[in-house]
Image (cartoon, rainbow, N blue to C red; front, side, top):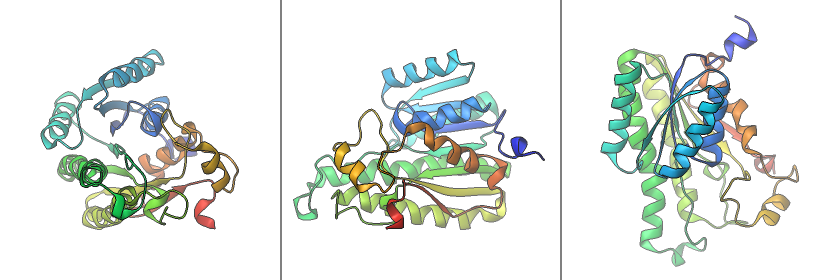
Length: 254
């Protein structure tokens, strides 16, 4: 196979959560630009339809479902609809996530703030992966990409105190390893992306501090996530499972 063939996702069916904006949208764009068929899931209806229309204008095959990843029925229903339309699921990117509403010390964290972050970042990812892996196990192949964070591998408190976010993303990293071992013999690879600080529509809250904290002296651009996604979504990663791919401008090399 040529390098182009190894990294190709042409004709692959991909389900992406949190796809309306930010890194999720950039991941969807990267897959679409390389020929994937997209099924996008997000609770922000207006932003989701806007993203889909822009992708369609570029020639992409895109379907959307508006829903919340914390609702098991919504996630399973989207996967069921995808299978009814396409009959296969090749790639699942569990990307939907949020950060602490009010960053601060643990003893200052409100119950509802803590619970909301875990509901979206961990329980939502569990529900997404459960639905996708049920299909992939039956068909005997698939690529699952979880979106953790560099703060799933190191604590952010020294610069950006977010206890719920840190706890949830650390859990995602280890859940990814566990899923990878469960499905290693079934033709399914499960890996985690661990982004650093990227400039998106809503983050970071303090760009100057984030830039100063990043050894490369700048924030990540959303399009810089595309190469990592293509690697983990394509046959280039067929012998890669249970790993974490860090894209952080050098932060964790400190």
